[in-house]
Length: 114
Length: 112
Image (cartoon, rainbow over all chains, first blue to last red; front, side, top):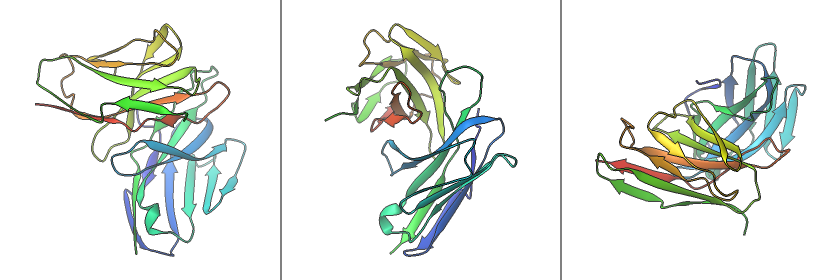
C-alpha cells in the first residue's frame, strides 16, 4: 500500500533555483524520511524528521513536517545539475510495535538544467 | 569497504524459470528487505527479515520466496508463479537502533 504520495510527479528547474517537493501520507507516523535515487541506482538516505519535529536542516536540504495535515516538504536550495534524481518520501508508520517497515511514495523526478 | 552488494546487475531469464537474486551486506545489520520497483513507481515491499532464520511477507510476496540462513545474506527467488517478474529489484538493510535503510545498487531482471 502506498502511504506517501509525492507532489509534483516531475519538476524541471534551472541550476541555482530552489526545488520544493511535497509528500502527503495517511496514517500516524514515527518518522518520515527522504531518499534520493539516481537513474538505475539504489536509494540513498538524505534526511529523517521525527513526528515531534517541525523542521530539520542538512546542508542545502530543509525538511518540514506538519503532522496535523499529514504532510512534509523537502526543499533543495541553490540546486545543481548533480541534484538531478528521483526523490522519495518514506514513512515509518506508528504501529505500537517495532516492525520497522517503511512505506515509500512514487517519487518526484527532479531535473536541474545547467 | 562496508556496504550492500547485489548481483548480478542485469539478469535475463526465460518465462517459466525460477531465478535467485543475491544480496549480501557486511554492515552487521540485523534487518534486511527486498523491494520491487516498476518504471515511474515507488518501492513495494516483497519480504523482510529482522533476524536470522526469520522473515515476513511484505505487500507483494506472491510468487517470491526468501531465506535468511546467515546474517549477511538474504537471497530472493523469483518463481515461475510470479506473473510479471520483469522489474528492478532492490535490497536494503537496517541496523539495530537505526531508522534509515541502506540500499544496494539493484538488479534489473528481464523475463521474456
